[in-house]
Length: 275
Image (cartoon, one colour):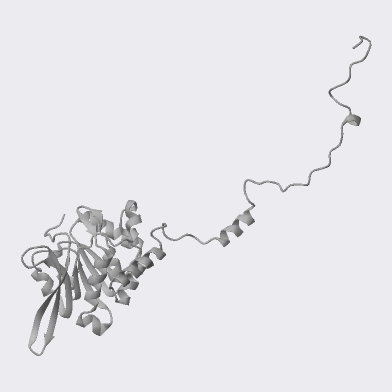
């Protein structure tokens, strides 16, 4: 290039040298958050989730259907089991197993009973003479509150439930859980279950969640005429446990206790005293 030739101008270009491009279509303004009225509308369309996945009402219903297929026929018991959220009574780490037909640890060497066993024992109570006449359970004494699950189910079937637990930590936890779930008709006692609760006797039904070699005399003394007791007890010969049903019969010949034996079960041992 000759020294006298001017260099071409590169930057900045004059307006006359800039080639216009066709304008792009307008795009919607991106917003990191929706307007308040839009957020409110979205919230109104959403339904709050219920349950924690595997512990929802639908899973409870499937548990009940499974128990029904396996032979539990009492519709009142099935409905009560469907109503009570079993996962609320176990440690959150075990919630995924709450609706399996299995017992689960609740601490202090105790367990929550299998739903099938709870259902079977409650069906036996409801088959007693007094319950048949009334169409429901009256005043019930429960021995062994544990985590409170069975008491919550009983409360849907009975006029009143008196439940005794000998272990203070379990009693306190059950009180908190049942209060939070607002279960009505319950009287929870920290005491020796072998002694029952004479202050609220007689009972139309008694149910025990622990088994011993024989039935404590206090239970029989507190069972009302026409009442029924269901409890695990050591099997004849000392091998294992069986469910025992005792009916307090009153007829022309007087009053007596009639005992029948049912299927094998496995419960924690019945102990005296409080801790």
